[in-house]
Length: 346
Image 1 (cartoon, one colour):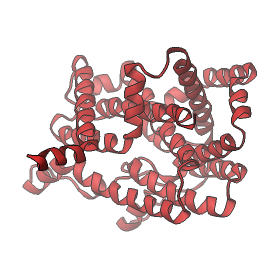
Image 2 (cartoon, rainbow, N blue to C red):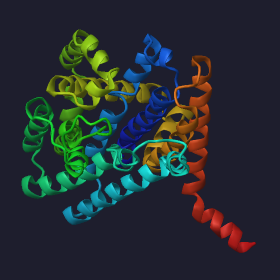
Image 3 (cartoon, rainbow, N blue to C red):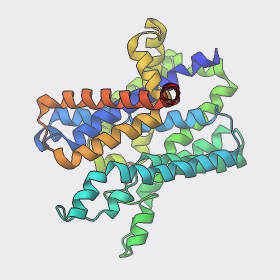
């Protein structure tokens, strides 16, 4: 029964990584005309709340159910930060090669130290492991901390000094530098909220499910999402505003995420989880780290060649191609032990 309950978070993680692929293609491959059009903004919106925020909330939720000590979780956080640097190097290999050859006059440092989601995930795990060690399984301190973290970007000043070292360092926490995609403030608020939800759910499974299924909650949550939809859409489709949003967008995103989760939960109950779409999303969610790495290795290196040159009519083909190639590479990677045994036997 517990395994069945974890199908939904896996599906949501799979959904998030698929939407990340489509938005990365729009950001890096689409022509400027498409990027700034309504269709382009819709693509950015779909790559907004249902992508990184949803993924980070689910990561926080899983944090409460996966066994491990605070020290082991801390170590996992450090590993993710190291993976972040390695991924930055890997996805920009083509760019670095062209800089080395002298074809491009570009500073490579922002591409090496760019604050992608691996850094956010690693730092978040470190903070969660440390916080939960002191607060135990109490959700209220986590929710209060999430609200504070989401508010900090609108009250803290950005570093404006001339030190390059400090510019790169502050980018991981609070910065308006273009390479600061997922700074800890406000993005830490999402895994904190997910962890709080996980602790609440673990304590009161039936009451939690009943609360989110109540008509009053659905009515109020839907009304808030609809009333603030224009605001949420504008922030999601404006990347600097999205990466450095404040508490209002955070609150709207959490409500939106709860409705997304509820929608998929009901849909899975209605049509079952054995169809191709849910099986694929669940599998992608279970292999989300490998999926994320492979899609970036493909998109990042091709973007150096095809940056903002792909016409709208070919974008879906690019999406399908990257998705299929990433899935194939993930499948090969997850079955690598099987392949090694086959080759050993021959």
